[in-house]
Structures are given as structure tokens and as C-alpha cells.
Length: 542
Image 1: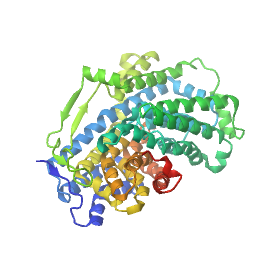
Image 2: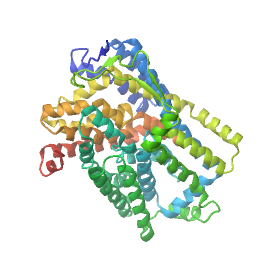
Image 3: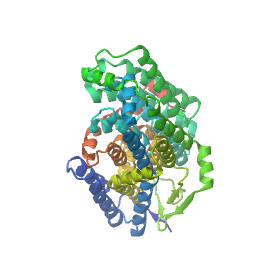
Image 4: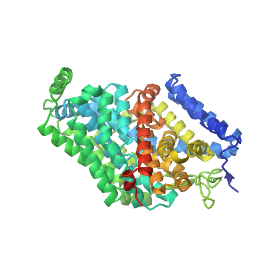
């Protein structure tokens, strides 16, 4: 008989919500204001979460422990595996000096950091989100930006802010596939609705990152660049989501955005390039023997990441090797209750999918090995560099495992639902808070997909109670969730790891938190208008 989740164990909704939020509150305080190392803060938060789950919410101790194990395993495979291999590839290009050459090429193409942040953080990041997801965009773009001369805090923070507009569609539409699974709403209806919300922010985000980097005065000299990139992303995003479906939205939109920005730079250059940047761009942008070859490792990675992301290829690799392990003591041992899930809901699954061949990290590992050989490294050198990379990232891997363990304990104990239900008691104002629920889900789990699984059903049920469209509020969960991506601990750790700035996660969190909250609130305003105010109501999918 599965254990039935309890959402108000203290028979006081406010008090139960406060207790449920203690682990997250403590972790954020330790990171942002306590200046504690992130792996220590994550460990303390995990212990608090286990204690609250078992001793307050009544979760069986074995189930709680195995939830932590399940989350830690997922943190290491596929997320940790992917991060290690991206950092390994970056390390090889740095060792050969090719990353400096690549930096020069980008500087010659866009000899202005304000444009570089749009091209790399927004355009490149969206491509990697559409093909890989799971932290790949932030890892790649933050590493590239720090090599372009950005300070570590800016490289991490701006990459996190930029990695929002494509997240709702994610890797080949995965978040919306999960959302339709838990709500029963037609996939195409969800795709259309998200495609009538997110393009607004796809147009805003390029301007936002430029202002975050250089202020409003800095935006004046380069506004054609974010305008071009934003429009070239938002328009295909709308048409692809409304007339094709969610699977290729980010890939097509990011390619269009990159192409449009590159074409613009052939006929237009900003006139107010800071002298230091102009000198750097001119100096590093000279012809070099490795002018073309420096791109080869990244082109190989893009090609393999794209190939690994195709469903047919994933299925073929899974047929070669795939191991699904039912977590003992947790699989089908937990049952979500109303109103989070309908009475007919099945007990929660807990299966660790060890898809070592089909996971994106394996494609990146192969790309790194092929690139290493292409760059002239011998197998022994590759092994040494790989071992050094793993050792350097040991604390980061521990942190990622602890963060995912915390997220899984939160999910299976029902404490996440307790916090979510607090937002669901806001009556007619709920359409405003609906995206904030998705924002909370992504901040807790690190995944828009996981947030949709977590709160999708609750959004649909509450929509019927409030009297608004379930399609609107279910979609709002995914659209609002993208703004939580920049503050989830997993993404912050990935960014700090990729830039070698480990131990400064609290600074990164403080840098992006207000951006995240303001943008999530703006999504709330848009959804509120779509729920009640003409002509916005005409945008809602029937």
C-alpha cells in the first residue's frame, strides 16, 4: 500500500507551508548571505529536507532516503556526466590555444561585448537548449564568455538570464510532452498557447541582457542588434509552435536568430565601441593559422549533440544499451493526493534510467575525444587531462548530486506541493500567480520538465475552480518556469563550474535573483491579461 502524501500535516496551511520551505530558505540564506560553500549549504539543506519530510510530513524513512539516492544518481548521470565532458572539451581547446583564436574570431565578428552577449549567451545558448538542455547552454556559453574577456560573475549571470526564452520548449519539446502527459491536454494546444506567451519575452530578453551588462546608456549604441536577434527568434518561435509543434521550435528559432544577427553585422557596426574593446578586437582578430581549425571542436560537438537529440537516434542507442532500475523502497511507494493529483492517479514511479549511450553527455564525450585527437593530443594525454578535469570538478559533482537529491526528496515528500498549494489559494488573482508556481517549481527542481510534472495537474485543476482556461494556466506553468531557470541551484553550480569560479555561487544568486523575480512577475501580468482583458483574451487557445 503506497504512502499517501499529506500537504497540511500541522493542520494549519501557513505553518505547514513555512515548514516545507525551511530547507530552501536556509539554503538560499547560506548561499546568498552566509557566504557558505555551496556543497556545504546543499548538504545542510538536504538534511533539513529529510528531517522535515520524515518527522513532520510523515514520509517513511526508507522512501525518503531512497528519494535522495535517486536524485543523487540523476545528478551524476546525466547532468554531471555532461558537465564534466563540456569542461573537458573546453580544457583541451584552452591547452592548444585554440580558444584564444576562437575568441579572436568572435571579437572580429562582433568587436563589442554588448553584441557578444546577445550572440553567445542568447543565440548560441538557445541552440544548445533546443538540442541538449539539462545545463548544456549555461555550461557552454558561460565558458565561451569568460574566454571572451567577461568577468566570471557577468559570464555566469548573463548566461543564466539569457537561458530563459527557449526553456519552455526545451530539448525537442520535452517540457510540453511532460505537461500533456500529466494534464491530458492536447500537445498542440499547449504548444500554441506557450507560443502566444513566450515570444513576447524572446523579444525582451536580448535587450534585458544588454542592459544588465552595460546599462541603458550602453543599450543606445547597439539596439539594432538585440532587436534583430529578438525578432528573428520570436517570429519563428511563434510560427513553429503554432503550426508545426514544440519539437523543433528552439533549434529553428536560434538558427534564424544567429543568421540574422551575423547578416546585420555585415552591414552595420556600433559606433560607440569602447576603445579597450576595439583594440582587443583588432589585436585578437588577425588571421591565424588555426583560424578555421579552432571552430572544428565546437562544430563537432554541435553536430553530435544535435544527432544525439534526435528521437530515432536515442531509441536506437537505447536498444543497444539501456538499464532501467526501479528504486527499491520508493518505486510505487508514494501516492500523490488531491488536489495535486486526481483520485485515479497512479503511485509515483521511481526508476533510474541508466541510458549511458543515448544521454547527451556521451555525445559530448565522443566529440571531446575526437576533437582531442584532431588537435594532436595522444591517448595518454587525453586520459591525463580527463582525470585532472574530474578531480577539479569533484566538489561540483558532489554539489550537483546533493542539489538533485534535495529536489527529489522535496518532490516525493510532497513539500513542494504544499508550497504550490499556498499560491493556489489566491482566487481570481490566481492567473497572476500561476506562472510564479511554475517559477517555484523550476527553482526547486532545476527543470521546466520536472516543474510541469510537479504542478501541471494542480494548474489544470485550479483553472477549473477559478473559471479560466486550463490550457492557459497549464501553459503558464511552463512559461513562468523559464524565469526560475536562472536561480535554480543546479544551473548556478553548472555555470560556476564551467567558468572555474566555484565557491562564488552566492554572488551569482544575488546577481540574478531580482531579474528572475521581475521577469516571472511580468509573465504573471501577461497571463492575468490573457485570462480577463480583451484583446489579450483572444490569444487564448480554446
